[in-house]
Image (cartoon, rainbow, N blue to C red; front, side, top):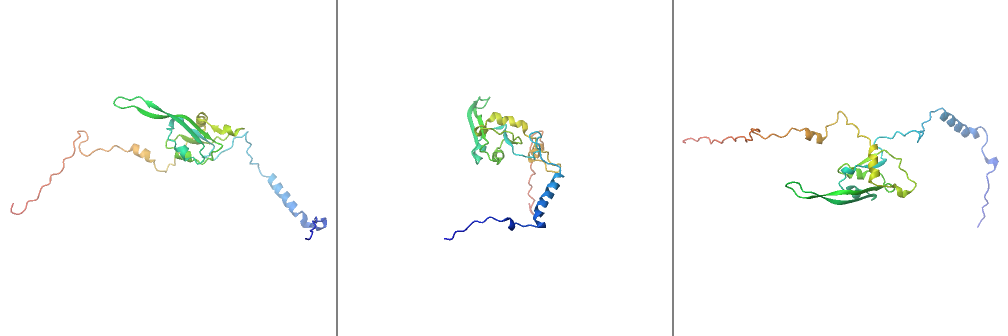
Length: 208
């Protein structure tokens, strides 16, 4: 095998002349132009950042709306939602019978596993989960990112109100159905009478 000697570039091989400092001059020109521009750096945490609308910071919980249907926990791709509940028997009302309902005991989200996909919020049929723009909940220990329902409920105060509808948009179907006048049956509605059907008279034939 042939030995190949490593050679170091000699100073005589480097480019010299007027073009040698062209790159240096272009770099200095870029630096000079940047010095004249106003700074756009946000001085966080002294200045609160202006977050875009519908920012996904943390998931807030409305405990009163949760019916323990388990849809959010089943649809979560990371299985980071933990729900525990028990059944409570409601006394029977007059003319009825006893009923049972689910009572929420635990609702926890492990944000060390959550990938902020918003599937749980979209799957909830009772509007118990909302996005909050709050993002300052870092912890020194990753195990402390498992937040229980009390902490999730406190973040509801930071959830912004929904944006106003466009003035030219169509009215929601729920509002239209609620404002629709009740259907009045044909006939005298006050007396509760049905309209009389017209009698069918057979035309007379010749010779009758």
